[in-house]
Length: 141
Image (cartoon, rainbow, N blue to C red; front, side, top):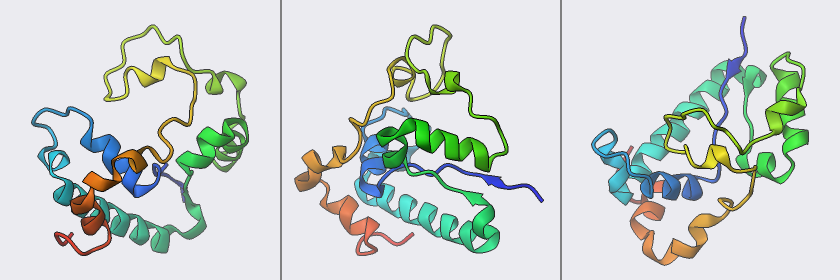
């Protein structure tokens, strides 16, 4: 049986603020409403809880905060869990010349950094609908 190769992102509030700030045009309309975004993220958390219960230790999870805090250690652990050899070149970021078609196209051209950790803190006073939805007090998932 194969391991599940899922790499969840960061703190829910940070993840949601990053989604909210990204221009997805009409692809993800929920991303433009803080309460709806929080409800979607709660649904994601419920889905991840399901996969944890089904897959147990076969589910591979990586903390974004740990990854950017100590990339070498986290990447080495991840590669080992995947049964791969950790190649140093995988940790080198920045200077990517090839086209990248993701919302993070500019970030893949930068070195690994921790600027996004706790980035939602500066917006906390404006995030009450999101905070309420993430805690279950807003729109139901």
